[in-house]
Image (tube, rainbow, N blue to C red; front, top):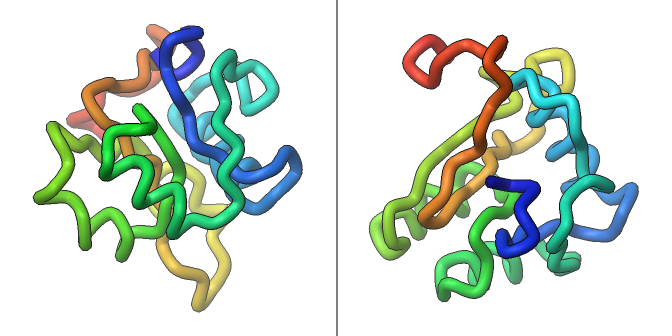
Length: 121
């Protein structure tokens, strides 16, 4: 659903750290499409601003730091962690870098049939 025209996906600018992380996470869950294929990107430079917009319901999906996700998880309608750098793109994670997650609101990514089921991730 990430690539549907009605799905509002919060990212930073093309080529920014958030977009690079999102591409690594998508690849890590077996998705062949990446950020340029997102049909309804909402460019929000700051991860703090993306977190606030996601929590307020203005975004359906975004890439945020684990601490940001954890802080607002209880306030978001049906949040779902889909991927993390450590679990899905371990080669992309750097020491001392905050853990990053894709935060979702009311949707889940539809991985290709070859991707492992969420319980195996």
